Amino acid sequence: MNQMEAPLLRIALCLIAGIVMGDALTVQFPWMPVFVGMAAATWLARKWAQVQSLLICLSFVVLGALLAGQQKEKLQATWPEGEARYEAVIMSEPVEKPKTVAVDLLLTKSRRKVKGYIHKDERSRALRLGDGLHIQSRISENSSWRRGSFDYRRYLETHGFTGTTFIAGWNWQHATVSLRELSYLERSRLFFLQQRSRLLKCFAAQGLENDEYAVVAAMALGDKSVLTKELKDMYSLTGASHVLALSGLHLGIIYMLLSVLVVGRRWRMASQLLVILSIWAYVFLVGLPVSVVRSAVMLTVYALLSLGHRQKMSVNVLAFTAIVMLCCNPMALFDVGFQLSFMAVFAILLFMPLLEGAIPRKFLLTHRLVNWLWAMVCISLSAQTGVAPLIAFYFGRFSTWFLLTNFIVVPAATLILYLSLLVLLIPSCAMLLIYAVRALNYILSQIASLPLASIDGLQPSMWQVALMYIVIGAVWLWLKKTAIRAPE
Figure 1: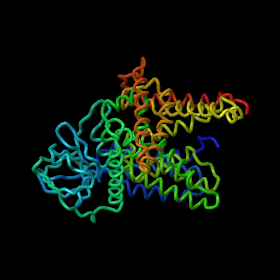
Figure 2: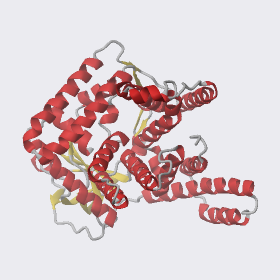
Figure 3: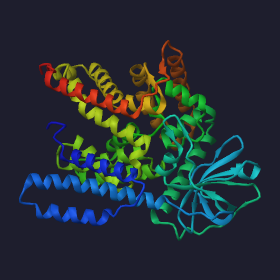
Figure 4: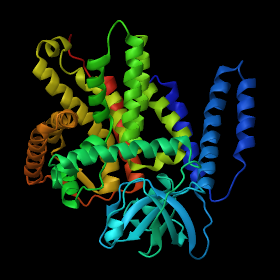
C-alpha cells in the first residue's frame, strides 16, 4: 500500500493545527459547544461523504484547540505571594548544580508538579528519589527565560511543571508523606522510578563509574542526570545523541530480544500480550519519556496487527500514535523529543522504500552483509533527512559524520543493552560492559576529532525550517515519480 494513503494522517495534522491554534490564543474561547456542534453536524452529514470528511477534519481542529485550552488552564496556578508550607515528594533523581540540588517535586495536596532548587549542603546531597519533604518556600510562575530557540517556560509547561521554587537549607525537612491523594498513574510512576534507582545502584556497585556509568544509565535506563557536558558534546558532535536518549532503537532491540525469548507459534496471542506488558513495564521504568511512549504505542499496534497478519508499520500507524498521545497530552507537541522522534520515523517510512528499491531484492537476500549495510545506509539517510532541520533549529548543528557514526553506535547500543541485562543477572560480567562503553566512547572521540566533524552556528528561523520541509517533501514526490526500481 502507498505510504501516503493514510486517512489518519490528515486527522493527525488537523489535530496538530488545532493544538497550535488553541495554544496561541491568549483568551479563553468556548470550544466545547463548538466541538459538540461540529460532531453533531458530522453525524447528520453521513449521506454526503465529502462533506462529512471535511466536517471530520474541522472537528479534529476544534478538538485540538479544546484540548490545548484545557491543558493551558491546568498549567495555570495561583501561588501565594510569600512563603507557604507544602508537603511534597521527590519524583526525579536529584541533580547537583553549582549551588543547588535540582529535583522535581510533586505537591501531594494539589498534585501540582514544581521544579525545585534546594540549597546544596550535606543534607540535600543525601536526598533520594521518593523522599517525602515538608518545605516552606515561595513558589513562582515558570520563568520566561530564553536562549536562542530554547524556551525554558515552554520546556517546563511541556513537562507538566506549574511553578519553580528555591528552598533554603533551613526551610525543608524529611517527612513521611502519604501518597493516597496521588493518582494511580503517579503512584505507579514513582514505584517504577524507585525500581530504576535500585538498578542504577546495582550498576554502580559493580564498578561502573564516571563516563561508563553515565552512558549505561542513560542508554539502558533513561537516566541522563549524570551525563557531563563534555560527554553530551562528544555524542552531539558525532551525531550519536540519539543513543543516549531512549527511543525506538532501544525499544526495538528489547522487543526483538523478548520476541525471541517468549514468542511461540502455539501460544502466539498470550506471548505477544506478555511482550507488550513487558515493553510497557520498561516504559514506566525509564520514566515515560515521550519518544519511548511513541515507540511503545507503535510496537503495541505492531504486535496486535501481526496477530492478524496485517500490514504492521505504516504512516497510518504513526498518525494513530500521534493522535493518541496528543489527546492524552496536547503539550507533548512542543516537546523536542516528540518532534524528533515522529519526524525520524515519518521520514523512514517515506524514504526507506524508495532507497531500498535501488538494489535488487534478490541480490540483497543472497548477500546478508550487503543487505545489512544497505539497510543501515537507508535508515540513517532517511532519519537524518527527517530530523536535520529540527536539529539545526534547536541545537544549531549538523553532524557530517552521522552515517559513519550510525554504523558504530547501533551495533554498540545493541551490545551495551544486552550486556547491561547480563550484568544484572551475572554481576561478574561487569568488566565486559565497561570495556564496551569505553571502546564506544573512544571511537566517538576519534570521530569528533575528524576534520569538519560538525557544522556549527546554524540558526534557521521557524519559517526557514518549514521551507526546508517543503523542499524535502518536493524531493520525495520527485523521487517517487522518477525513481527506477531495480529488477527483482
